Image 1 (tube, rainbow, N blue to C red):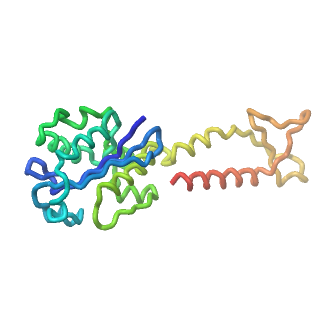
Image 2 (cartoon, rainbow, N blue to C red):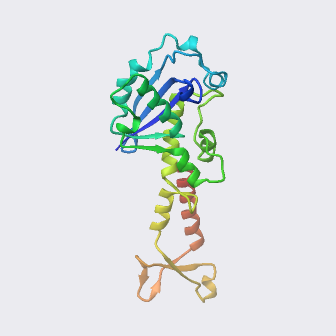
Image 3 (cartoon, one colour):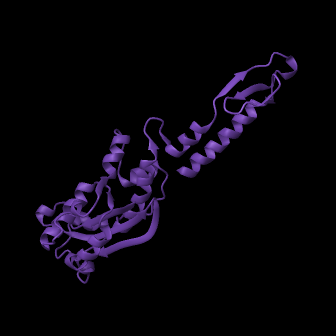
Length: 246
């Protein structure tokens, strides 16, 4: 399965008011593995950036005036994202701008959804999992312990790469247990245990156990095991697994 993580930067916040795309970036994942293939272009917006957009991106019309127009990179972009699931944080924002650019150049592909299998909004997903918490890219990086290479200024390529990590964490997060799914799978594989306390005083510091799927019996006796040691070993393994998944 092909997934494209996409982000844009723009001159402002409303294509209806004439704002345009200044940067567009895509990162490819196939069958859960980042392929290393990217699409990344700075675009001449043919207009000045708003003060806020310039502060956020560090870009200006002077820096972008020698960059290609969107019409010059459109076909390459559309080919890169074609037939993929497209993942975007706050998807309506980016989709509106991309559709606006396609309309301006009168592209035969009128909308992003027309060539993609699905558009997934990670902001919507995050809000459903964490309804009372902040769900910006920066907030999700903190929550999931993801390395955040963003400086005070935003860049489309950096955000697209970070989004790939965020998406992986979101789809592997169990909202009930607040635990990564792969840890739950390990826990569910641990056999059920029946516990008894031996009556003899000489064994008073040991527990006996019997795993339902693989009982350790010798005649009518159950092989003794120091349960506290076993639990500590399992706990340590689960902690290490959880740490590696964050």
